[in-house]
Image (tube, rainbow, N blue to C red):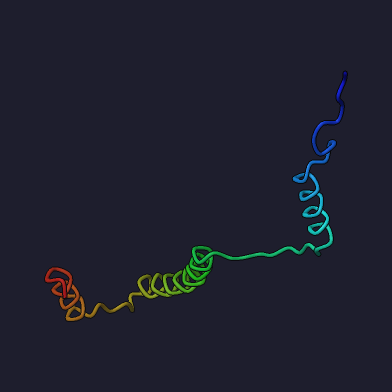
Amino acid sequence: MKINNLGPSGINPYKNQMKQQQGAKANQAKSDQVEISSKAKELQERSQFAEARQEKIAKLKVSVENGTYQVDSKAVANKMIDYYFNK
């Protein structure tokens, strides 16, 4: 005697579940999304400061070349004291 198709006759419930999930995913609209990290935002801000710094350096170069640049010795001394005494 020969017995064929023992069990649920070839039906795999997990396959049916996967097909349903894939069908649900196909029906959803796909959209692109861009997210800028905080590090990238920080780098963008730094580039803006770099432009302002370049302008300031150019002005200082011109004043040094013309001999009109004045150093405030008291301010320099105060900054040195603050640096060495961690103020």
